[in-house]
Length: 489
Ligand code: NAD
Image 1: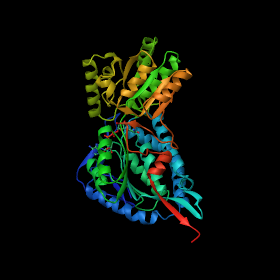
Image 2: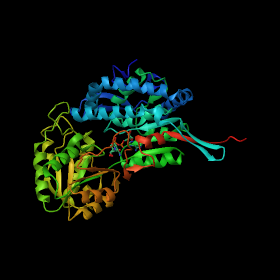
Image 3: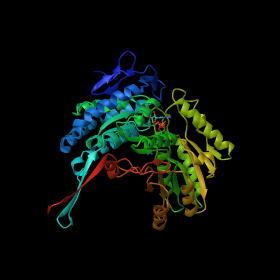
Image 4: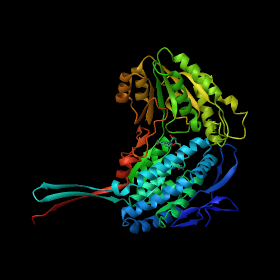
């Protein structure tokens, strides 16, 4: 059965092991950002579609929860091998719908596969804890149980990695899942579920409902959905967190970012610049761990600023399928218009535009391109320093010393990541202790954590308690039962 209606290119939902048409009549175009070509259409599904998927997931849960964990893990072993076999095909699909460079997409697929590797250790992960003789002849034991149906809502920028942060671990823990992928990058999700089915997942264990707000609200409001995993922009993350909590659901909502990179005077300037360029402009700056603000400390600030401009000039912009390309298009024309508004705002508020990426836009009208843009002499109170722009726009701030640079990070409402470039052990330690963000890099441009650690944003970059991945992910997708037993009865 096909994941798409061949005549209309309209994607189908996947419910209870079947590819089905959405009940909604509205649909949206899925556009290749590098060519503006319509590659599919996605249904704007309704609450009725959600109800059907949740019902199927609830029914599947009744048996899936009792499947022994080694057997559940075996589905993931098989899934892992299918994903590895399809690595290149999956990466090409990411390029097609998201626009990022093939090398980045290949890396993203790898990151997704690593989440499956982590989740495959389920029998070990799910072990409880025991303590004999907590009092005379009395023992205590802890067992882990799944929650039930979990809803996952994902963004456009990592169509492979983010869904795989969620459903493999949730499902191997014994839950069942309803995924709502981004309506801007929905194609890969259908491929992921096809392969999951091929790996032996029983019907109803993983379902997909495509669409937008109504699907999100349908999941949040449904009594049988026990937990929500969300990744996306800050206002939506806060909305999903608050609405889900009111409904009594467990929720983790990963949100927007403004990641500062501190360049200390003693650092290797060539290497720091190379890392900043790749972090700021890879995936067109559309990464929640992208460098968007550089804090130049000390005397070599002018040298670093001019090197950054020089390297930005050398960047090759184009279609992500071309090997040479690093700078790819932003996701939609509408998003680029918002970014152009930020550039105007930066100018109006007095920042110094030392590289204007708008000049390259007209040269490449075939896609949503924007050249590398750099503002210098940005101050922490300017809009471009405070808000997430999510595009190839970099702000350079100046600081007298590390204390002042750390103060900028402290004052930011976001706290996803931060990096320092230095060889000075004392500065590294101070940065580690005082940087007010959850994922730090020392001479690392994109300090994203691996699947066995939590993806650990702070402040307005995360709403909830338990993060995705690692032991946090395990704790999020399980609940604990304690048994206290007396044996001298
Ligand atoms: P988005 O918030 O527009 O969309 C995310 C999801 O929410 C989508 O599935 C979308 O359909 C849904 N949605 C959008 N508006 C909604 C509304 N009003 N009501 C209900 N649902 C709604 O985010 P995006 O543009 O797809 O993704 C980029 C954002 O995600 C950036 O802000 C980025 O920083 C963030 N992100 C964060 C992390 C992290 O780990 N913190 C990781 C990846 C992306």
